[in-house]
Amino acid sequence: MVNTTILLLSLTLLSSSETESRLDFLIRTNPIIEERPDEPFHSPLDLKETSEVKLAFSGLIRFYQIYISSQDIPSCNFNLTCSRFMRKAIEEHGAFHGILMGSDRLQRCFGPGRKYYPKDIKTGHVIDYPVEIYYIGRNKNEFPLPEDMCSHKGTVYKLDK
Amino acid sequence: MRHLMKTILVIVLYLTLSLKGEEQSTEYFKPANIRRFADYLFGEEQYIKAAGEYGRYLFTEDSFPQNADSIFFRIALCYRLDKNYKNSINYFRKIADEYPESPLLEDSYLEIGTCYSLQDSFELSNKILESFFLEKPTEKSRAGELIALNHMQTKEWDKAREFLNSPVSNKKQLFSLLEKGENLPKKNKFASGLFSAVIPGSGKFYCNRPADGFHSFATVSLTCWQAYEGFEEDGIHSVKGWIFGVFGGLFYLGNIYGSVVAADIYNEEQEIMFKLSVKKYLNENFK
Image 1 (cartoon, rainbow over the protein chains, first blue to last red):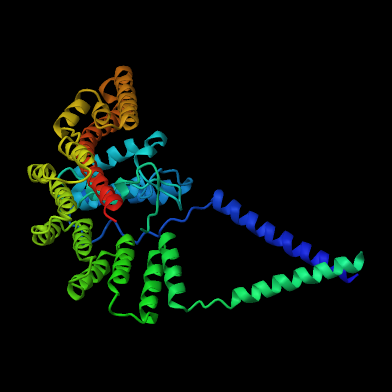
Image 2: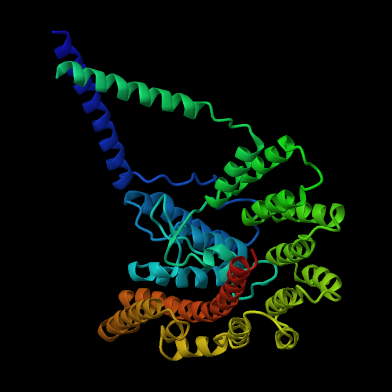
């Protein structure tokens, strides 16, 4: 009787731990909701910004992010999504450069092009160089290419390095 | 038979337990064993733990500080291999300052030079190496090798060649590295932009990004074709024509912009990869 009870107890414990590990595995391999870093609230009508053109374009992108992109699952290949990249580019380098940089980024965002970038093991997305690197008038001494990202092209890379 | 089995079992148990007891009586804190453990950790590439054990060994060893230079050297090496160059330089300097008669003195100076080189302080590295090894022919070839590598990293090819022409080891490998550095493949950003202006995506092909080039070509040509169709059907007032036209134009200009930047990035990536190959050579040959 005692033996049977111990056996049953151990079986229950074993099966429960197995279920838990399987569940962990499933969540890890098939993330239904991906964790994205919270975006700081940034109103397109920020009074610090004085350029109307910049305001208009970053407002349009913010509208897309809040009302259109949120209706679908995240599908951008990159870690800093294309819309965030474009918005950042517009804010930092103006509407003209920002739109062209964003347009180029949209053309780089597709499956076979992933091999040109290091891959983030946590999210499965590829990591692009920072926005500053894609600015045509970049000061190389101020914004050099990140060495470790360069050597990890097409391979796994830890973002928090 | 049963009794015999029992006796054998008892003997086996006794032997096992007595052996275990003997094992437990090992003196883990004997300096020789600490040293062995530190060497084991070093061999297992657990450098920081190994440095700690070497420090513990120094603390327990009676001969300290007379013969401590070899242990300081090991500790410094541990920090160097762990890429903690600041600590490493401090320990190598300790040997240079406190043990001027040590047989490891020249190696220490060489290691200081290597650490500065790995930290990208090429001028400082050269200064130390040139000042110390000028009069010492024994390690001059190794120092010359390192100075040549430093000049390669600062793109002073002639100076690097000058040092390589003096007697150095691994001459063949170093010359191939020098030639690789001198003839790094470069892409002209104006040509890249021009290619993309003539045929969308060709600039990306030119910059060794064929997948991007193909995708850009498909995107620009499809949007422009749709715009053309829209204008063909409804004339200048075609909504489809204008929408696709604007997007096609933006993709076209964005592709030219991206091709110019891609050429720039390609050139910089080549330089970085060369620097990394020099660092790899340093890590493999200077330890």
